[in-house]
Figure 1 (cartoon, rainbow, N blue to C red):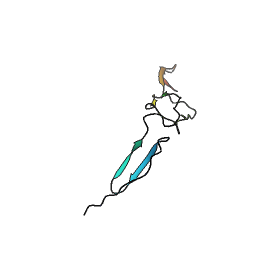
Figure 2: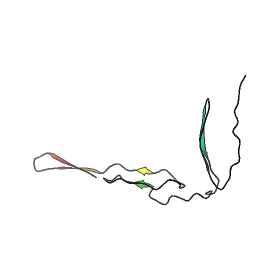
Figure 3: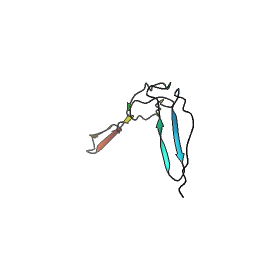
Figure 4: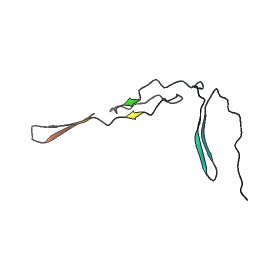
Length: 90
């Protein structure tokens, strides 16, 4: 005999439904309204380069339009007076 579990409820379209439902298999995803659903858009940078100091992209509770791209750490190599190489990071 096969048993099925049903998830029922009311979705208030003033907000988004996010999360994971677990049983024998995993159902995950996001249900969002066609419009913003009252979630403010993320207005920060979508392309960032790492710095020495910690950085925080204020994305919590914001609607993202696309993925954030993190560039590689800038590195340059130059020959020094001792005929070796000096590496500059950052």
